[in-house]
Every structure is written in structure tokens, then in C-alpha cells.
Image (spheres, rainbow, N blue to C red):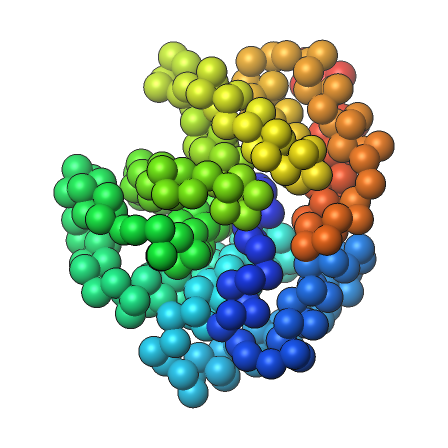
Length: 276
């Protein structure tokens, strides 16, 4: 797996896209739920609602961005199998691409650009489109994760890395520094001998932890999973995971993701002795 990390940002994207108190409440319920089984069982109904709203409002970029993040979340964390995850995250990616294309027409051609030109073009995105660029990059990464057995997916990672880099330039605080988690992962996918940059990855993970005041437990889990296992640092690995297991999961807007992180931490810690 390329990036087994919570692929869902703040609830603001959904709230701004779907008007009304009900949408606000439902978004909060999803992110503040401490039972992933309930979310896994109930989220498909919400996905159908979002699909219907998009059909009725096909030019609503905010709604499309919301759909991108919801389908990325479900496809990456709740899909029944790899094929199902690939289907769901493919839709997430399409929604993310449509969202930014509607709001910023030059992006409609991004998928056809060579890397250097893509980097140049993405540099024209401004602060007002951070939410759309975030949905675009996260949904793209979720699909690459779901199809990571395909080498063509691996070949697209530099483009995603560039998009995340632009997000960092625009607003490193977005989603409590969530972009740092993704950049930490992207910089630790390969060992140093093959172009990986573990030193940069560590800086991103530590910055993500700092920016969330340690409340984003997924940052510590990915720090342990990606950096510590690659660098064979068992002491740091086990310390980070124990901190996650002992930390409270209940954090407004992050409870669900923290519960999932704690579950991952327990599994990683249980396999620590065998791995190291």
C-alpha cells in the first residue's frame, strides 16, 4: 500500500458544499464517531445522497470536492476488497478533478501535462483554491494507493508530490497540517539508496505532530510505519505507537480517524518484535 492513511480532511469542505443544518450535523457525526463499524455501515447511504446532489448540481465545485473526499475515505478505509477500493477511489479522483476544473479551467488539461509543465502550471494556483487542490491531491493519492500494484500508478507519484508541495507553499496549516503527513509518506516510500528522503520525511511527520498538538494520531502512526520501519528505529517506532495507544481518541473533527489510527497502532506494535 502506498499510503494507508486517513484520506479525509476537515468537515468544512462538506459543510460548505451541502447547505443546511442537516449536512453540518451529519458531517460532524461522521468525523466525531468513535465506532468505525457504524460509519462503515452508514456512510454508503450518504455517498448516494452526495451522488444525487452532484447529479442535480454538476457545476458545484464545492460539492464535487466533498464527494471526492468522502469517496476517498470510504474507498481507502472501508472498501470490501481491493477491486471495490479501486472503483470507489476512481470516482473520488474523477470528482476531485472535476471540482478544480470547474473553479480553475486551466487545470482541466493537467492530466495531459508532462511533469515539468505540470509543476509550472500548478504554481499558478492561489490561496483561495486550497480546499479544491487538497481534495484533488488527496483523492488522486487515494486512487494510486488502491491501485498500487499497477506500476503506472507508482509512476504518477511525482505529480501528486508536486501538488502536495504546492499546498504546503500555500497553507501548511490547512487541515491542522495534514499535508505534512502526506509529504512524510511520499518522502519515505523508497529507501535512501533508491531516491527516498527519510530526513525530509521525518521533518514533515514531526511538523504534523507539532501543528496538531499531538492530537492527529495518524501522524504518529505513519511516522512509525513509514520512517521508523524504513530506518529500523525500533525505539522510536514503539514509543510513538505506545503514545497513540494511550492517547484519547476523542478530538472534535478527528475522533473517527484517531480511532482508526489507534487500531493501526496496536497492530503495528504487535508485529514490532518480528519486524525488527
